[in-house]
Figure 1: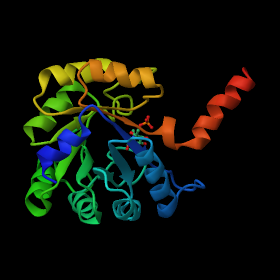
Figure 2 (figure 1 turned 90 degrees about the vertical axis):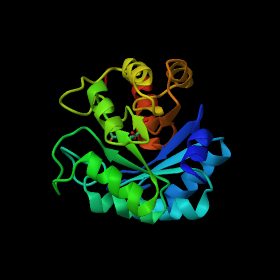
Figure 3 (figure 1 turned 120 degrees about the horizontal axis):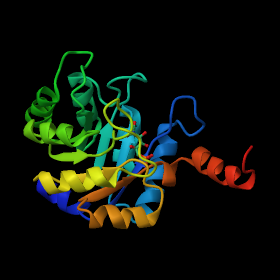
Length: 228
Ligand SMILES: CC(=O)N[C@H](C=O)[C@@H](O)[C@H](O)[C@H](O)COP(=O)(O)O
C-alpha cells in the first residue's frame, strides 16, 4: 500500500493502541496479537503497537495499517528514542514509525529530522511525530513528518495535562498543518472520538479505554468504592 493509500485507509477511523507495560499479565506478543485481532473485528482502522516482537506478531496476524514504536526508559525521550530503534520498528513490520518529536535531546544525539529522513530513505515507511505542543507539531512537519499526533500532550514539562484529551491542540494543529493530525491520549469515551474528528482530526487513537483491563477495572472499582 502506498503512503497516500494508507492515510486514506485511516481517515475518519479509530486506531486501537494495543500495549501492555513491563511486568503486566498481558505483556506478551501473542496476547497483544489477539487483542489486535479483536480490535480489527470491532472495526478498527489501524493498530498501534509497542515493541519489536509485538509489531512482528501483529503484522503477521492483522492486515491493517500498523503504527509501531519502541519504548525505552521511563523519563525524557521514551518513544522510539534513537535512529537505530526507528529503523528496527520499520523492519519489524510497522507501516508507520511513531517517534517522540518533542525536540528534547535524544540519547544518540539524533534529531527528529535525522530519523524521518533515515526512515524514508532506508525503509520507505511513514513517520508519525508524537508531540505535546503546537510548536513541536510545526517543527515536526517542517522536519518531514507524515503524520502529527497529540500523543505526548500532558506528558512533557511544556504541556499541562488536561483532564480529558487535548482537543484544543488537535484543533490548532489541524488548522495550522497540511499533514494529517491524529488525536491521541486520554480518549476514553466514544463522544470524544466524534468531537476530535469534528475539530479536524484525521483519525483517532484509543488505547487504555479499549485495551488496558487493569485500568478499566480500576475505574469501575473506584466507582463502587468512592473515597477509598
Ligand atoms: C504518553 C505515552 O507514552 N503514550 C503511549 C503511546 O504510545 C501509550 O502509553 C498510550 O496508551 C497511547 O498513547 C494511547 O493513549 P491512551 O491510552 O490514553 O488512549
